[in-house]
Length: 141
Image (tube, rainbow, N blue to C red; front, side, top):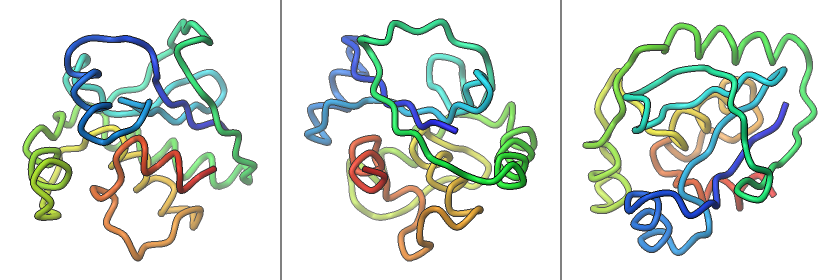
């Protein structure tokens, strides 16, 4: 399993996220068997897909986990597919640090952090909406 962190130029949203969080990263994905799992504003919310990517635009952290843990993550994402992107959660947890989110909506680092909390790879002492892509990268590296 890999966690992918987007550092490409992107659009104004990517630029804003990087500036606000003081990080080179504006998006993250969990990659299992060449399938990319995340919540994407561009795609409207939670989805899985194969992404042709330019390696210059991404940094990866490889994480060794058991096959059972991969299955837990895949099942979790499959249950979340189609849920909307959490714009309000970003505003109320990242921009205005009120640590609030909207139930049944996700942003990228929130859903990826939650997935790793499910398998014990991240401690549950932080709510998953606390993680920006940059904070998530620092925690995993």
